[in-house]
Image 1 (spheres, rainbow, N blue to C red):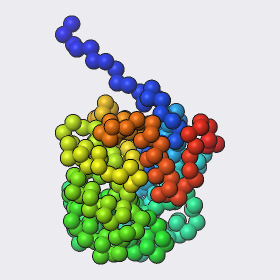
Image 2 (image 1 turned 90 degrees about the vertical axis):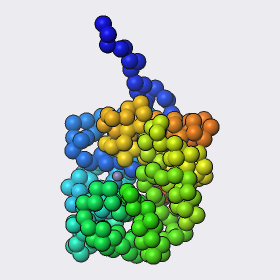
Image 3 (image 1 turned 135 degrees about the vertical axis):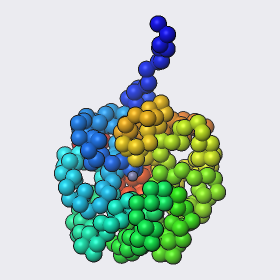
Image 4 (image 1 turned 90 degrees about the horizontal axis):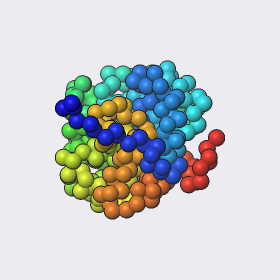
Length: 285
Ligand SMILES: [Zn+2]
């Protein structure tokens, strides 16, 4: 017997966090969750995740998939055309988004919108045009944007400032930068959402940044099914695993994980205009 007996990974329920955490960014409508979506939403609740923001990657996904959450009041919605789908941004698509935001109170923000120079699925000038048209719509409808930025920090910043978003409510999703970048975002008055990779040993710059971001500007997210935190790295991510991101962030900030969990949950509720959560169980129907 040479096979090493690894201890089993802890399940998120065992962290017993209070029932008022918020996963600010999840993709529960993707096919990855077709086999067990309901079970995983139940596990999120059992792990202290009281609300989850489901991000639809465009108006077509929203139209097709929103019924998945008809009986899940703990899921709120975010809708925007992802830079990887930039070719779907037509006048009709923008009109469909305008209609959706006008009629569905579960839609709380416009995103994820931004620039992605890592995958570079579409020409950069096209990505920028798509971002600008959605920022204009967000401004018109007084919606906070949720920004996706990959290998495009300077250009994303330039467009956001050019479109007048300095000092406006804005969430920088899946922050993976360093202290200097965090400082820039904070100086513009924006919120920053921290994903699972903060728990990867090599991400020391990110870890230092997370230690200095003021708590009242911080949200947590899974971005599931991607980017699972340790010790679930490499496995499919889901909202309950947010507990492990919280554990890392609390350690980096030298504070109790419960307090970090409650504060980031409250920040998310305030950011998305959702009713505040109580730390008492069974608050939601
Ligand atoms: Zn995402």
